[in-house]
Image 1 (cartoon, rainbow, N blue to C red):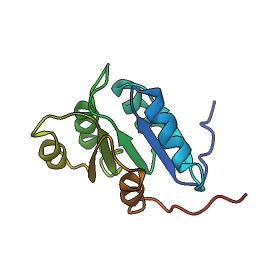
Image 2: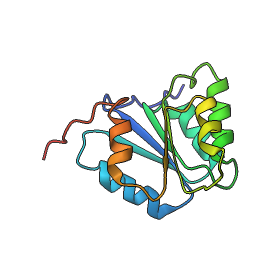
Image 3: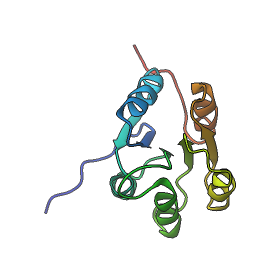
Length: 135
């Protein structure tokens, strides 16, 4: 019987965004911290990674193929095993009601692109320990 590899004790952040440049920018900004960083490039892949990897925090876009961010949030909030994972929406959408809709679905933060990285960092610090990585 194959067992899943043991997960690191470091915090895991899952970034779900269809733009590789956004994922690369977030990953590079979190690089100084002692944590693991996972990626998904569409909603369906993000849901799968959240279920299998059980991240400590999810940062997701709203406008993506194969399952937008709203469907990701709805799906994860309905599951007992993912309901408590904190989710930050990081999006470029300009829909007037997007923020209130996402907050009503239970996301812990909503940041509109473009935004200073500190906006994401300040929210992330509420949910994961951001300790400087050993150099």
